[in-house]
Image (cartoon, rainbow, N blue to C red; front, side, top):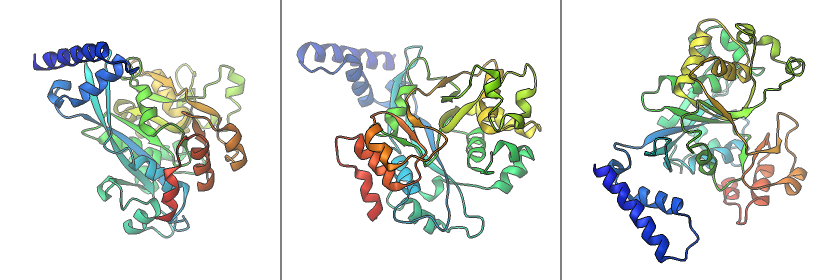
Length: 347
């Protein structure tokens, strides 16, 4: 009852403000602001649900510790740590989540970085991403946990970060979803939260997989994908399989658990086919495609600086970016303000 009265008060305040003000802000925007000012108990009870955002990164001794794409990406993630996401569910309830930014990192196998050195490389000393928010990924540990299935699932580079991210989420007692982001992805919106918010409307709140759908209707063209033959799971059952492009994606805890369990049971496949195919074959699983991709969101070639000025656009995803100069140039080309990320090179 207290929650109902509080929300009723918020609605009444919105109505009064709308009539009394010439502001062009929408009632929905005002409602969001007013609900944010209410006690958590009035927003749905209890604390906000943590929404994990995991930067999946490989660190090397050779990584520049003053200016690198990895450092810029870590800063962009750290900047939204603790930010709130308030939205209305399909049932009309108000729900609030809070960003819990973390770094899943695979260390240099030949010369592991100390945590102090890692903090320097990623520029985390002044951020909210404290040592307990660093999740170390290990190929040996993942292979021991899921078995030989890891070798195919991890892809051509054998990286452990995405397997570790999925396993971390599946074992979390407090998180129900996680965004997993590679460091060579740039989002040209205000910040990462401005992308996340787009997938909390009443059609995507409970979706298990949010990613770029790379499935092609033509079976022959799909079969030309280099990793097609490696997906044992894809050939099982009806043989219908899906493909996703995963530089950035959101995954639910129950899908992460299903993927890890399937790997442990001995079936495998490249993660870009395995994850969406597991989802498509589970009756409970739903997924939507990320629409905010640019024509320069691709596997290769690496994005060049010459492409940025001509093709930069607001609220779009770009990939792959391997040069911090290109990363900053893209942000500058799509922002009305000076690029604050530039100062990361001097810290």
